[in-house]
Image 1 (cartoon, rainbow, N blue to C red):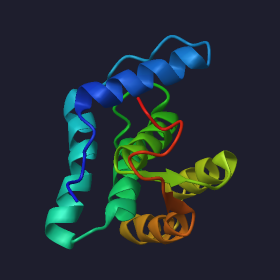
Image 2 (spheres, rainbow, N blue to C red):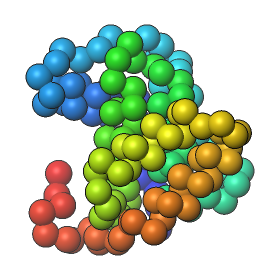
Image 3 (cartoon, rainbow, N blue to C red):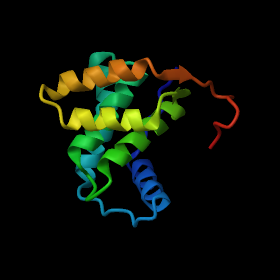
Image 4 (tube, one colour):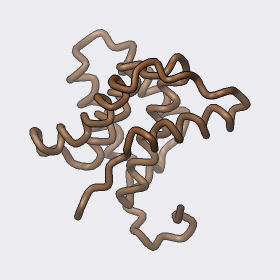
Length: 141
């Protein structure tokens, strides 16, 4: 299976739609380089570490959250990007949206290493992701 990765313009568009959906103006991009670095972490994790889709989604979300490429909304953008990346690859998070948000915040507020916290997040997430297949109803677009 070929993995479909999000692009920088797609993540910027996700950020814009998410912020506008909450009634706020999109936050300015603080650094395109920081955003690109976060996005590329998923591919690097696959290439260098053999990471599966869920681990790649975790690295993507943590990268956006930690790099803070926008002036506001980074954790929300990280979450939306994680969910979009899973969907692009025929997977869906089936757990509680508040719980995944809390877990992502916990990675940011961790006491141990970022690598360990990201691994724990991926392990937790893996138990809450299911295949939706490319032809699942309501999953187009």
